[in-house]
Structures are given as C-alpha cells and as structure tokens.
Image 1 (tube, helix red, strand yellow):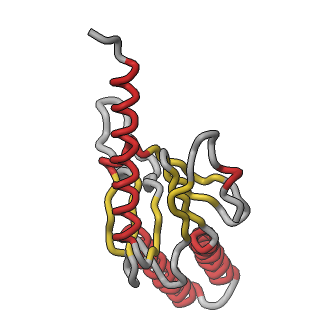
Image 2: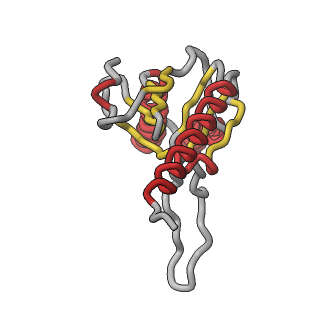
Image 3: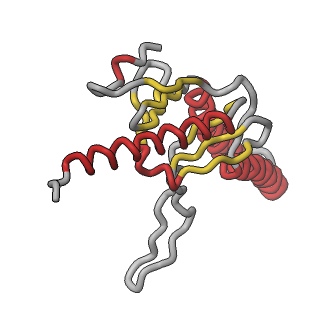
Length: 193
C-alpha cells in the first residue's frame, strides 16, 4: 500500500500495520453474531410452525422464502463487514491516525488531539484493539417529543493487533510529542514581555 499519498504536506509516517490473520470481534460484533444465530433459529421455528399449521403449500414456501431471504441479508452484512476488516491498513502519522481500505480509500481519520478518548481493549479471539474515541450508545433516551432510535456508530478502531499494547504506547508518545511541539510553537508565537 502506498502511504505517501495519504500524508498531508509536512506530515510524517510514524507507524503502519494491519490486523492479524485471526478471528477478532468486539463485544458488539459478538452480540451481533449471537443475535444472527437466534434469528436463524427463530426463522427455522417459524417455518416448522407454519408447516405444522398449514401443511406443505404456498404459505410454507412463503415462510421458507422470507426466512431464507432474511438470513441471506444478515449473512451478507456480516460477510461485508468481515471482508472489509481483513482489507484494512492502519497508519499513524505525527498528527493523526488513519484507517484505510485495501484499495487506498481513506475510511476514517482521527486527530491525535483526541488521544484522551483512545483506549485499548482485548479482542475476542485474541489480539487487542485500539479504539479511537467513544462508541455511540445502541439506544439514546427519548426526548420529550420524539423517540430517538438512531443506529449505533462504532468509533474508528485498529482491530486484531498482535502488538496492540505497543501500538497504543507509540500513539500516546506521538501525541505527547505533538502536544509539546504545539505548546513550544504557541510560546514562541506569544508576544514577549
């Protein structure tokens, strides 16, 4: 992957990497997998119930088609997410963290000014994940006028890292160095007494 095209003028590459080749799921993704399995079980139960009530006929065929379509859609969503994760590339510069797709498309960028929101967590299946911010809640409390059911948004993350602790330490050191540089330039720009 050609990282140089993603860098701003004067920006320097500090680290780059990719997820390890293993199963890695966040808790939210693991819950999604469990719900997908329950969805499949309920779809099978629906088909068996409809067949028991109506025998084999058009209603049963319709129930099978509906259940099958639902499972295909959910499976496709998971496969799309999974294939994107394995194609990711992570880039740390002296001012931001980038998540880039396999084809070089910038998926997300997070300023090192937000380093206080970053955290590291274990990935289910091994490795670790550096989370670049705060996840939005799955559900937000309703306001006085409307129910606010918005889709949950995950913060950008560097998932499935074999050396996540080291990467997190490099990110923090880079952010601290950047803050010292900004403070020094602000002091130099301040009018003298």
